[in-house]
Image (cartoon, rainbow, N blue to C red; front, side):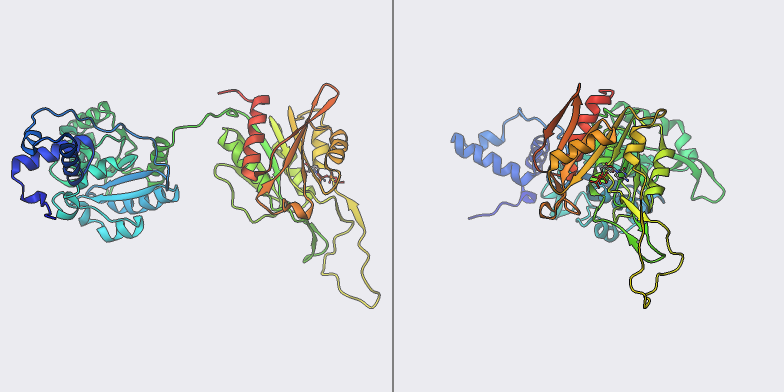
Length: 474
Ligand code: CTP
């Protein structure tokens, strides 16, 4: 079977193939295959088809973020001193589970190497429009289309001028001209260049063309003694701006609401080295905090000792004992909703040893226990500052609904989330939970039993119930 070398075709045919493949969002090679297949199907003579003047081709529509492996960004690194920050930007994008494929302009390679960009992005880096290997495959078209967003950082004055004019004389500008995906620019240049009317005209034109910008910021320049507007936005800002463009905002039904959550166990000291504790992992409380935050709430999370990282955007207060937890909870009031998911130790020792208790001939030291404050009951019974919606948990190992109903009556809260925490269920420390939501309808208690779910799913379901009750509906 003969092989076809596109580079050996005459210029007019190559130009035609380039144009047709670009418009169809395919590589030249794929386009040739499509043409041959069409010819075979139609029984047309090749000359007839290739000589056709009019093209009924359309570019593919912008698409939603790639489902598999997270959204994809083509990152074009321009040639400026801020290019070194683009390496950190790759990291910040990847932290947000965004795949990154880099294009480096010739000037960018004076500041950072393709090897560094490739090592950080874990992808091949593209530098040359006339690279036989990539351009045979219409590399610039793929870079422009096989992504969800194009980010240019740093966007130099020259690069923006070329974009505004529609130049395409290198891989970066050809990719940008062929793009039908959203574009985000992070301009970076000397303040005099930024303030130059020519740059102003170009930026205005680009914004009119639908291009987005982040920064530049004010600050010190690389040039000694110069300051002003022109510093590239920080990589975290650019990554956040990219993320916002890739993941449009979700509904925020709890926007403007303040939600307090307790989570985890408490540790009640016996002496400086020993304590009373329980097996709570804090996962359910943390998941509720994250779900409430995602729904737009301002969240205060008061947690006992757990091995979980602070969820993003949440004020986390880490405490040890039940009494510490109560103080933090009281200090956080007023709130719109309070959710008590902590497994608070019911008892503490009456007097904590100031030194480690020693074994003596007299046998075991007597441990006298006293009851801890009941945080849920205390807050539910407040006269002032009682949150409009107070939700407790009932962790039971037997007679789940019966015990939960009794607890519901005793605590004075508005809802109780009951769950079976007997060892066989694996709920304590595990990732799944089977819960029953108890609420009141007049004098009756209604029990809503949910199927087995992950703790995140329970959190989302609970937060949407809360949003229906107190939310703004926005
Ligand atoms: N709770 C609390 N303060 C305590 C004990 C419990 O705030 N000192 C809260 C828990 O956070 C939970 C609810 O009360 O929301 C029920 O906790 P649970 O441990 O199931 O019940 P207890 O009240 O401790 O009763 P028991 O141990 O008898 O089941």
